[in-house]
Image: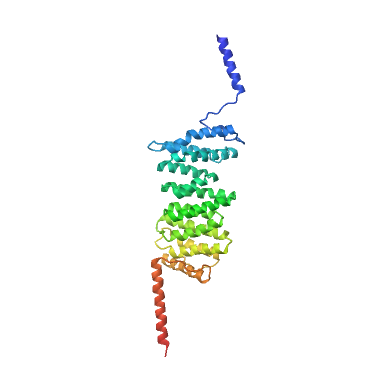
Length: 350
């Protein structure tokens, strides 16, 4: 009996030696360093994602720990480091995006939508851009739209590096729609950042039009909006330096002029007006005697001088509309000046 049992053990060991060890479907650790990924390897990745993704979009525990844990597991496997081969990262990223697309219809709660889009954004995959664009344009939850915008900004560097003009244009189109519908500065901020990274003519035009639209309806008196406008100025500067179309440069300068006209004290960031002036000085090589000290009122007057300078030198076709308070002051000063001229002329007549 003992001899038979020993023979059975030997037979089992022999079979194990002939068959490669199978990694359990609860892990993809054995695939991380592989230089090429087979169909069987992809199937293992799909099985692993099949056990994780449901927790990401349907977890119901009160503190959302399962959702967060699922998100962290996926992003941990997608992390770029020396222990993960490029072949594995590419295959895992592709399979992850596909799994998240399929699971999206189950992500209906605000928490599920947020976790889903955080995961999609941080994967920074070009094939995830359609999901991010759709969420930016249509998602009902503000936090989800923020992560869609953030994700588009995060992936923009990859899009430019891989030279995919049609994606740049599509991302710009989604930003244009957001500027028409979105009012939250926290969401518009990464869109300005994204447009500043892109090198497409449409991106430059949407950036200029978006700056004009947003500054005319948003105060810089809160910190988030002030930082958003700071990002918009940096993006305008980058776009202007890369723009080759004369009409494109004019459009960007018109956005600059509109910022000069519409950024009104009080401003949460004390350096915002100075930053706007410095950017204009850099791209034009000129100045208007912007005061380093003296408060925001004098700085605002200097920015209005930038507007007049750009119009006077025909760098922009016309003066942008002014805020009602500024418009009233200009009319008052103009009327006062005309009155003085008339009085002076009558006095000088013999």
